[in-house]
Image (cartoon, rainbow over all chains, first blue to last red):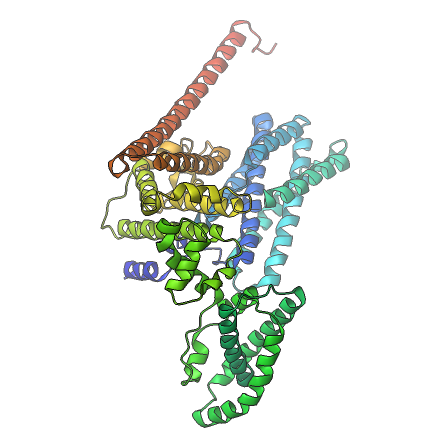
Length: 207
Length: 372
């Protein structure tokens, strides 16, 4: 019966492949070109952000993997992997073009994670705090945009972004708990990293 | 009240369209455009209100309205004639306003409600028949317009001339291909057909698409040169990229799946593995490759499509057999390159592991590994 429902849907829709096998999609089909562009930008930059965070944790693990903080970083990394997987699925479902700068974020993220980890555990935690704060701020502004637009249509997407933002804030708090602020030059390091994140977000939306 | 205004507007529009087809339209001035736009937006808002009032209208008040509207109608049309014809605003209003609401209400007015865009599409489709005779040019468009019973001066609507015709043809071919591919996909999903190997799928899709050029193959070089004009390049690139994206999408490309978990096309598609070498080990996430795959796949297919098109232009073999052989060879090249890349990568990984092992052995031998 469910199968015939799917078949009926396939026959009626003009773009049948827009529907996933699950018949549940987080992102509603956009109503016009402008909304499509906006949604695609949001998804593209979120995907790039999760990918970058993934690489940062990979870099940190490469240096600190065998130390005492290894398991904690591994746990945070696993959560980021989950986020990335979810966004990758959404991108594929909605035929969103991924950002062309992914190889750049690959290298840059790994280098950032590894170099801050070389400053020790506190350095790695400071990097985590800075990055997670930027990401949480960015998710918040996306939530604002979507709420202004149409909270009801975008409910699932909003819930998803909110869930991920909460995870990132948890990472941020974990970083603070583990002596992030005691790294020398904390203020400088944090602001430099946040500036880099803002630039990365700006560029990933467009390219 | 809203109904009166809207009905007057509608009749005014019909008269205006007549006027524009019979005489070359003057280019609209910006202020009139804005005025028109503002007016149309107000009309749309009123229309939304009137939809709720629609149910309360019965036949007798309608007659009253109609008589009252004839005086309103004159003022409405007068204000319409003040502004020059404006295809863009008309298109915006026409496509935004649904057709059905007023045809229900006014039984006496049965006119076809056609937007400017639809009219252009009709003319261009008719003009395609005259392309073998006149080439891709304004003469073909004029002949097409005449065959529909319109004046050949309606070619003034097409600011881009022959470029419009070529781009329309390409968009038409692309949408035909998308239909064919989605039908095939439905067949596969319903279990009525076997899913194809990726290489075969790509080859069939490109062959189908290029066969659409066969009726126009004599004049196709002229069309290609029109597409290379600077003002046409963005549009032609856009069409090309949507074509390639569609083909890959229906080929089952989901260049994001890590460990092959989400794959609507078919679960056991080993066919697909030739271009996603990385993601068979779930922990070995190198997402860069999967997403760069998105770009490299599309770039490769664009290259294949363009070169095959060029080969087709000078092909004189029966049923273009040389072209399809060329296409086969190119696709085979890509397959080979992908598997070579995979081999190089796994070899590289093995070499690195070997080196690391050698380094550890050396450290052990020289005693550097021991803590003293």
